[in-house]
Image (tube, rainbow, N blue to C red):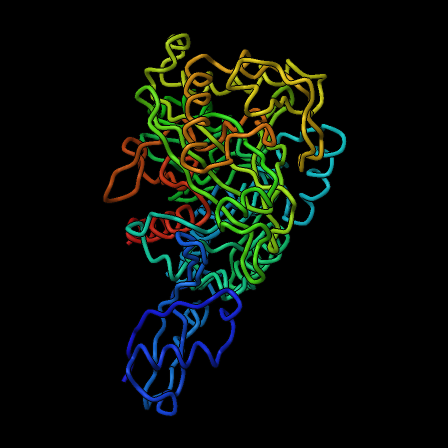
Length: 518
């Protein structure tokens, strides 16, 4: 017999197997001697009271042993000589589409503009230390996509998109810690995710798929409303009856290419704002009500939202014990993002704090039509760069000074390696965003006492929360509404927001390709 029960543990008890077994036995109303095994199914931290607790949902095996499920990879087959499909993009949507295709008996041929995951490191170092941005290899572009070196958080609310358990299990089978299967907010870390991504590549190659790096798609071959293939690096043609477009939210050249080919796009809402950086001990004190974080408690996080002047102001991609990183994809722009290593042991906490925007907010960019949001996004990023010295140093301002329209006399210590410079972000940001951020940050201070402080600073600009454009597709076939055989997928298509939702979207699109071939 198997019972599922809920238990609570003190932080010092959370990994004590004997305590877990005894509490599970008590909850199941059975003597511990009758329990063969206890399996943790879900784990989260409850910090609502003065004493933080671990809440666990566990399965209690009474008189029978746990039988593990077979590995997903056991069902994979060689597809070397099978029909093939093209995948543009080696991020989570593209790679998980490739894995799903192999399972379905289709050969994936993946093209990515960037470099393989280890080679990307040199280009990231060039951004960090020299301010040099390679437009094809950076924090957003290259094997693994934006999430590889930008934290590796796996939390998603998109449970209806597909089998989240399968996506997480595949990550575990490729080297991720199995804790991601049970944690309420799973996280791999930017120091460990690259190895997982490399292992996924090896699986794709092992079963007969192909992967081509430094292969920028420069044209689409379309005849009579059907996609026939792609052109890579302006000269090499590759043909397939189906092409998955999984290029990520920052591949602006793909949007312009689609527009020039007369392929329908539509504007969509997105968000834009700043990164807010606090000392991590301050966030720990606020969230855990402890002067010093108790052993076995992770660096504390937060999630905040307010409604200000008809728009949502909310925290985004919160990185406890994390770093702020330069995420520009072209010279002449400043874009920042956050990341954490697996241990989350940086002395800083950072989060995007952004304002939800609608197409109606881009009144000055109306002449750009569908591309108004994209051009608005670009203009803000370029304004931040123009305020600086031509490097990747980012503009910053103390939170309290920003709220009071006062340029800060200094910046605080930071995790941002290219460094910061004091700037009047209250003047650099568009008025609608500035006003809502000023009020939103003050409201956050009411919800989290101590959050609104001169010991925190904002850094501009957090602008790549999602794509301002959508590549529309049919809800049933996942195919573009006008181009047969073209399957938009993931964040760049406007149908996902994060590693796991993009991965599940890639899986769904791969199934749609299989149905299309049938």
